Length: 192
Image 1 (cartoon, one colour):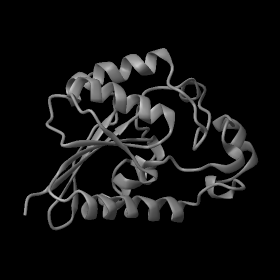
Image 2 (cartoon, rainbow, N blue to C red):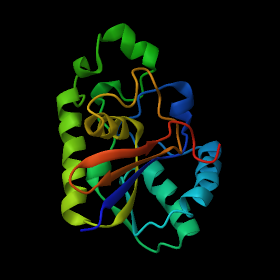
Image 3 (cartoon, rainbow, N blue to C red):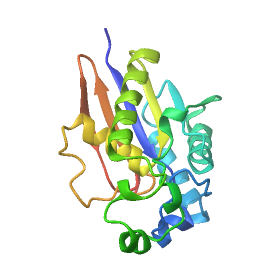
Image 4 (tube, one colour):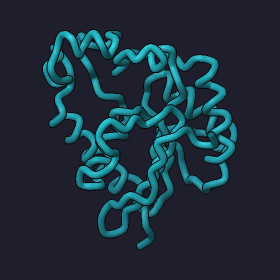
C-alpha cells in the first residue's frame, strides 16, 4: 500500500485576521492582501503533485482553493464540512481582547465548539481522509484552529508550540501509512 499524503493549507488573510477577531464559521471573505498571498503560495503548491483539492465550504477557504486550482490545473474542488473552522458561538466577531475580558477560556463562550469537540472533529477528519482517499495526495484548504488541532492530534500535543500562530497561506503536510505522522509544518506563509 502506498502512503496517503495530506497537505493542510490555511486560507489567505481576511480583515478579521488583521483585527484579531474570532472568525469561526462567520463567512468572512479574504481581503486583497489575502488573495495575493494565496496566489503567491499557489505557485509553490503547484510544484507538489496533488491528486485532488478539498475545501471547507466557507468562502475564504473556497476562494483560496479556487486560486490554487487555477495554478495546479485541477478542475474540481470537493467541499466538505470536515474542514470547517471551529465554531465560536456568540464570540464570532469579537476582538481577542473582548472575549478574553469576558471569558476565561474559549470553551466558556456560549455556543462555542469545545476543545473536546474540535479535537474529535480533527480525529474524524483524519479518519475520513484514510477511508475516502487512501494512497492519494490530498490538498485540503481549511482554517487555522482546525489545522492546529489536527497537528496537535498527530504530534501528540507537541506541534504547534503553545502561542504559535499558524499564519494565513501556510502549508502543513502529514503522511499516513500505518499511522499519521507529521512530515512538515511551516507556520509562515508559503513562498514568503
